[in-house]
Length: 391
Image (tube, rainbow, N blue to C red):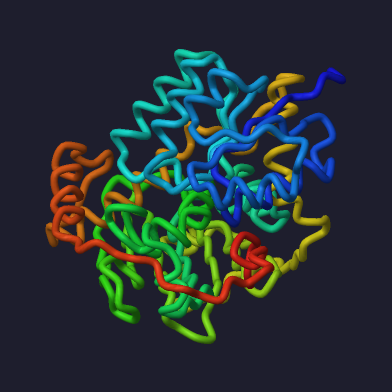
């Protein structure tokens, strides 16, 4: 194991960026140092300088890439900047860890993935919920074949209630121009990633995305996605930011079992007879299929962002496999974009989507959008609830 420390440059010193900076400077990632901070906003650079006076500050990414002594770039900027910044970093020979989502257009993410592949550098994405022990247990069961043939994934995740004040707190927030979407782009990337991580990608998507259903915003704050897989399995994903109290319930069903994750607990029903076999062989109309029931709770601390960062550093220094490879980011972006395209065209969309059509319709959305100005808003000092699994 290498004892060398990776020098990380952070671009974007907002809520999540400042948390990453603190984690690095508190030595929560033992083999990494924060070596530079970049933000175009002078007030944010001032805050960074007050907190970390020994860290060099830069007002542009180009300046930091040219002059900072760094090995890797950690991207924590608004979504639409992720791809272009990652590509610039790869061209400078740096490793890259980007915040989610990977981008706002599949075509941009494809270009970023290609640049990463050409560079030969380590490329990770901050899908920190992959570190959670319940999702890891579900992954273990699914990959082992314990569920048998996959039949259904259903996820209702509506427990991230937001007020109008939240949406008014940033000019880029909840806009097609600045964020590239609403609840699917901002709150749901982790869940859509976990869904694809567990069940793979559907072949078609149809969706309903209601723009401004609960808030005065131009993007969706409620969405329903229906996906269909090659084998006939289905995915249902329901999300929104206007319900209270909300729900977070994930169901995974196969012909050999069922998993339910809710309220910090994984419930596993292991069928002792294959359901499909019973369906076509039993002479009884409604038989009771025997099953074994077991429960799992989180058996280890949720390492979250620090876990992804530590794994990223270990991949650079030791060649460790990435828990969240950057190339996986295309799946969540593709699902989100397919949902938007389906809603905009009122059709069922095949994956991968038509990039040219999506880019055209997204641009039309952006051009029709009126300029938004941020309003003063009370700024909570603790934002951690936004980034951890909320049951």
